[in-house]
Amino acid sequence: MAARIAVVYHSGYGHTEVIAKAVYEGTLEIKGTESKLIKVSPEGKIPEEAWQILEKSDAIVFGAPTYMGSLSGPFKMFIDTTSKIFFVYITSRLYVHPFPNFLSIPKDPLITAGKRKFLAIIFMSP
Image: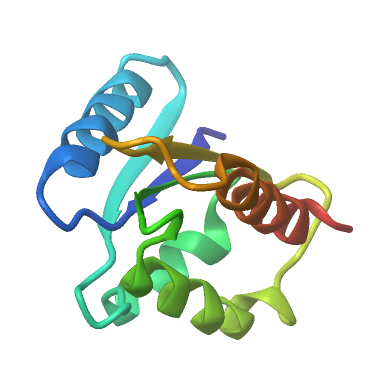
């Protein structure tokens, strides 16, 4: 069975989208994988069918820009809605990896890194 990878991202000005598409294209080169690219809207939402993709994914790669020293607002709203699958679908086989994107140095990069790490820990918890 093919490994299923989802790349989920929010991009305010297009920079994170470039990185997300590069990650996605890289996953397409891996034999035995099925990959999907999912964009978080400015309202912090993803298409309804994307939830089913996330539920079936073996790996999820998250990407978001850093605004004012933190994750973008729409991506934070998306994180809040992940409880839709968080309480229903968490297994030890799910691998999550976030990637950062910021043009300026965040006031406290450890806060943003900590939020990304927390998101990864939530999804990886058995």
